[in-house]
Image (cartoon, rainbow, N blue to C red; front, side, top):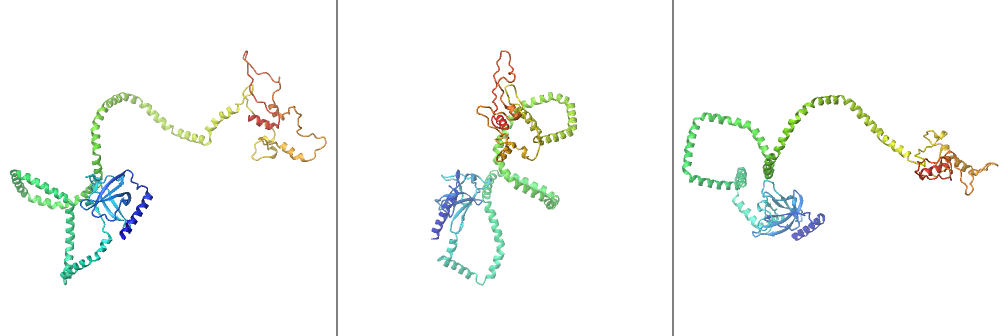
Length: 485
């Protein structure tokens, strides 16, 4: 039942993971397999992680011919390829029995894994680890395993009865030796491949030496002579050996720095090994490039010989220019301050705006020439003021002057007898006179008034298209309408 619950929980977790991460995020993935002794509770769809981050998923779990578990995985292509020092571990992800695979792709020191026998690149069994499930540990306390374990302990107890002190002493004495033995065996196990190569190499060397036995005998005879010569210098050798510890102590810091440099340079050397083919091609291409650049260098030398007199002749001018530059520094500082002040106050924009406004003001044209409109302000209303005066208020956009508002305010009062009605309505067909000097300026010219426009002999001059000023309404409104045409 616990296995069924674990499988159901795993399927639910996989469904939620797929819903949250889409299709698993392994587009453009990299296929890699791993061989495990035991892959219990590992099912397709469970996570594959690198450094704790999800990078793929388990595709399938297949039983091999030697009763191992081949776990097929698909991971993100950015972590490819796996190398020979890669390792993978099955780890529990939750208490309900769900699993995931934690992998390390390897380092550049390892060789790239390649597929064989129709399978993807495979992490070998020596580089994989599987946990021992808790139920297997607890099963040791069930029958018949519990009875068998009791028999073992009883037999050990009978054999060691009354020898507890001796057993403690043996363990106390044997513990350091066992630890050192474990270290030695671990070192030998790590160097197993090297020992195997050493044995094979020793066999080949001995076979070669046996074929040349006479030369080996001559070498031993020469070694005996060298040993006799060395024995004659025994005192010097003893003095050298006596001084050797102090020399080693003095050289130890240098050796430590050399070891640190070797450790730091190891990744650089590995990357240089990968970049060696490119460096080889570059070194091959340097020769043709240098041959092609030799004519340009020859011509550059000739040009330098021609330009040397010109540079020598320009030396006085350069000296004068240097003196001028030094003396012109205060003036340049003042000029910079002036330009900054002009830019801050908008002088350049004002100079550009003046011809624009002048051209815009003289753009009007009547039947004689270009004109510059102007308005003459008479009275106190023409002075500059910061507040609005009621008697100087005017609304040109369809409003009325202050006089018109005063007439409107007095409309409700009784008018004195004999007073003329303001603003009499003209008869139909009659032209309303324009008010004041502005009306005279805006009134259309009468027929025959004013001199005719000048014209060249034999060349007719067309009449300019000048809109007539309106005659109705106040003079100010007529002026605004005329300006806005």
